[in-house]
Every structure is written in structure tokens, then in C-alpha cells.
Image (cartoon, rainbow, N blue to C red):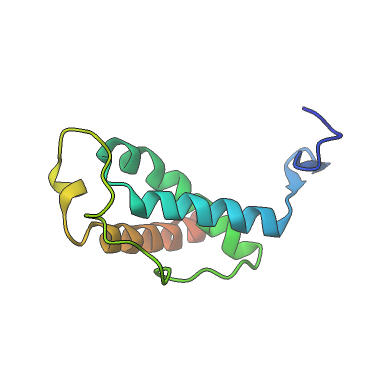
Length: 114
């Protein structure tokens, strides 16, 4: 780990580190935007739990999140190359993913240590 790199987490103790809230907010926003814009079923399945966890951490850091963002695209306008699946091709896919992320992050929040 490069301690001179400003993006390297600074150790507080063995179980905590300091993270720049602005950088975390940008990271979480980017994750969510990519998640909502893709229709790739495998990517959606693999990223959902991680993104929900990051949403909990962002909220705890005081980062303001909006549901859904004003510029959320129509999921039918952006397509990855893959074999189509019912979950990825739904016309309400982006909104359904937003709702699932919100619900999952709320559940996780009650189960994650503070």
C-alpha cells in the first residue's frame, strides 16, 4: 500500500480507516449510475450486494443520495452484448434495480455494525 498516495485509506486503528467523503460520494454515484445503465444480467447480479453495502456506508458518512437520479436513462437505450434475460430486458428494469438497491441497503443498514 502506497502511503504517499492521497487516495490510500489512512489507518485509524486495525478496524477503521478514514475515507474522503467527496471521493466516496463520487465512487458510489458512479457505481450506481453504471448499475442502473447496464442491462447485463451477470453484472447486475454480481454488483447488487456490493453497491447496497456502499450505499449504507455513504449514508453513514453523511453523503446525500437521491432516488432515482434525475438523469437516469431508459434501460432500453443502453445495451451490453449478451444473451437476453427477462430480468435485464424489463422496461422497468432500471427503476426496479433502484428499488431493490434501496430496500437491500435499508435491510443491510440494520444489520451492519456501526
